Amino acid sequence: MRRPCPMMSSFAAKTELARKMLARALDGGVPARWVTADEAYGRDHKFRAWLEQRRIGYVVAVACNQAVPGSAGASRADVLAEHAPKQAWKRRSCGAGAKGPRMFDWAVASLPGDEDGTPPGWSRRLLVRRSLTCNGKGEHELAYYLCAAPAGAADDDLIRVAGSRWAIEECFQTAKNETGLDQYQVRRYDAWYRHVTLAMLAHAYLCVTAATAQKHWQRPHPSHARRGPPSPGTPDHPRSGPRSHPGLDPELVFTSAFGTPYEPRNFNRQFANRCRKVGVRDIRVHDTRRTCASLLVALDVHPRVAMQILRHSQIAMTMEIYSEVPTAKTRSALKRLGRQLDG
Image 1: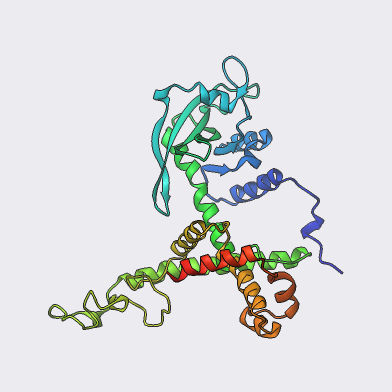
Image 2: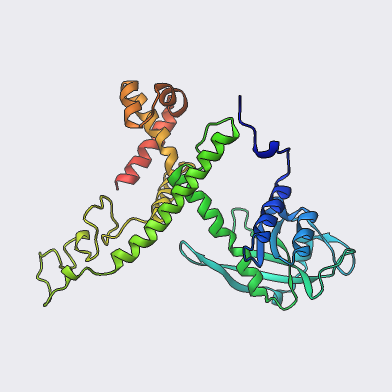
């Protein structure tokens, strides 16, 4: 017999599940002042009203055609943004990114309360984010957020909360790449629950280990103290290569040019840049396992050997799921990518 979901739960929409999860956390004493979410939650009026009832500020994304109340009646979010005066836009960073501060132009408009009213001392606002550079169509990309917060909350607070979603999305993407968060093939709730729980636990362990290791590597070991300047050619000389780093772990196999551990985000970014240079569509590093399997098949490698290389438990997994017969165009693209990776 299949194990049912806990308490034989019936179907519930994402926003309803989110309300239950937030209520359980808030009732359990978890300190929280803000909630941020994407359009799937932002367009739900009941979800926003529930957050206001719980006195939790929110900055939720909405679509460009979201109906927004105004002094002259409801209007679309993108229409209101078009009529924003030039002086309404201000350039702010919404947080640190992989390449430094994430700068955008922002505009904030105060909104009137609707029939059910806002909590006493609270206000609603429309937040609009505009990219600094134009897209392929020559247009600045816009993003829209509905906000509710205490009247004294600054616009910079709303911008900071809107930018905090980047860390969450980065966390999920890293978990998918490093621990296979989305690499499950299950049909039962308990199997899915175990896989996701173990993947998240493994990701948490890797994050804590990386943070602890960085502190350890940045702290010079007493044995590396030297009395005078190093001579050229000695291991401690700056031009002696990556292994001259004083805090280098001798068990590391792949390191940066400075001998420090290779950051996964840096590798993923460089890999994506190489793919774009040679015209290969954006793929995850984990997806190169399929490339490896296809290349092994093209080289007439025995299926069992390919299975062992990819660490699969069954040949069917290697031959039916991971490998495919490459076309001439695919082979040409893979060769260009290989030359880029080698160079």
